[in-house]
Image (cartoon, rainbow, N blue to C red; front, side, top):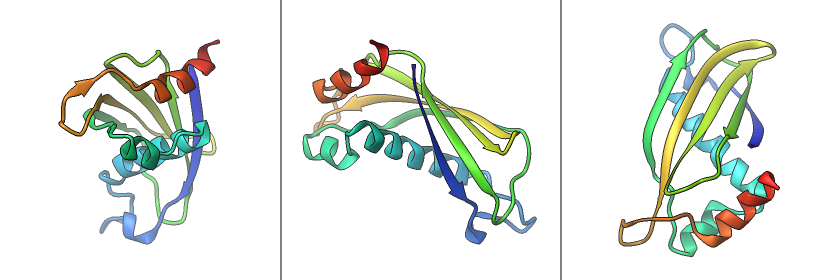
Length: 133
């Protein structure tokens, strides 16, 4: 299993009229966490795109458990529980200290420049496989 944590500080712009984090920001934070995970593994998303590979989101699910507010520091945890095949999922937790704010999951696949679904490229599988050895 591959796991990683990324911290963010809630910006004022990410809150709504109730002074709580607007629900749409969770998907943005999940994307930021995925990109940080790739960077941590030594694969930049820029590098993947320059090689003609893209990782679109094909499904997303979020369960909102508690509200978060401006200026709180949140930890976004991401896990890749299974080796990626044509389709693969990331699981997320959003916490503030021990308080669970939200959980989520995004489904992905790789596509090429022609928008054709492809197997994960070698650069990705070789790097990810190191976490299962």
